[in-house]
Amino acid sequence: MADTFDVVVIGGGVMGASAVFHLKKLGAERVVLLERKQICTGGSAKSCAIVRTHYSIPSNTALAIKGLEIFRHFTFTYGQLWYRLSILIKRSIAAVQHWYLSCQKRV
Image (cartoon, rainbow, N blue to C red; front, top):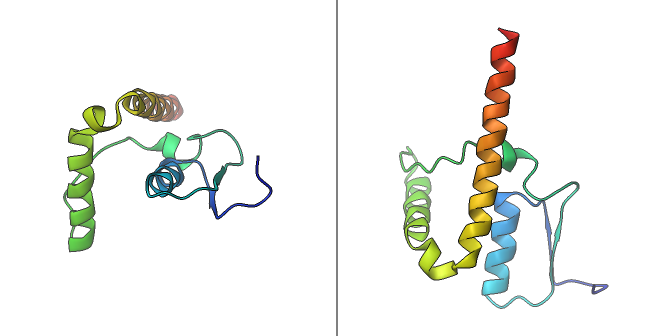
């Protein structure tokens, strides 16, 4: 591993992983992702992984629509990466189900 990096991304959730992916795609050479625990075990693991496009702020709506277009062509464009993403989504769903069941036990 290099001693110095051009970019240091802190946090290995959806946003951090996406940042690293796109930086590398744009040609960044020395990029490192720092995560305290395991990849996608923090807030991203607790996400319900919903894709929505209903926002009151136009810039958020534009980003959501762009994301939806990327998801529509994801397998074709990124191939094997889709399989890895699906694992992260399954983890997220499992985490939400676990949270829901633990809430039900408390009631």
